[in-house]
Length: 361
Image (cartoon, rainbow, N blue to C red):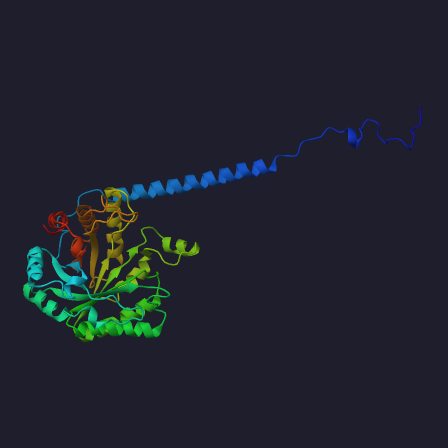
């Protein structure tokens, strides 16, 4: 037997490293790309499934027949433009409006008397004809309440309600409007973040002020999130202000006023069926969170913009009115309920006819 040479390889059957066949490295980059595509595709599919499911659910909300009793209770409202208090409207216009509203359910008129200044104050020069016009409307439309519609853009650099002095001036402006002859105050402050406690402070004090003088307080309210936790998810994504309020916050606002009007338009819905389902959902959510002694009004689109957020062919008065009736059918005996018509200067004869036939009849 031959003795192995200690200077040679330990195992002559194993090739030298330089002789070993090269194994190409695994394509890690391509593998990561494939995984990324798979994850992204799964996410897109999941979003599509949720979206399609949500849209289908909304469309199904707009089905069935509304209760015949789900119609006007004589507590409807109409937003009126600034021309009614700055001298552009006169006796002829008052007579025409009275004729237009005769036989409808409109009881409240929200007359634009602002806007508020960013410091919360209200310039009397904005409504020089307020008292004369209020008296004329009372004479032409007995029993109608004429409220001062006061609004502004809310946020840093605008009307910042975190400033206590500005909140004080907003409340003082409500008192100023009442002194000018209005029957109440209608706040429209946008965009109001969900959960804003400073706004609740303003409403609490403004209601005490208006009630002390025998007047009413109302608000234009944001839409309610149509599905759970949308507002919280938006906050997680860094979006602090959305078009929605959570149901709980909506209820807190509603409990601090005499009347709450949900701005159920500019919904982004592309078809009449989806818009109708969305309004049904808004009506039911608002009914669930509005105290029974507070007037709940659902806004109807008496205007005809065609934008990304408002599709004119979808957001029709007839569709919205039928949707409100479907939503109200769950509580057909509720008395403190109506619709709010936005806005007089953009309304057409077709809008008024649809309101009368679908809601007032």
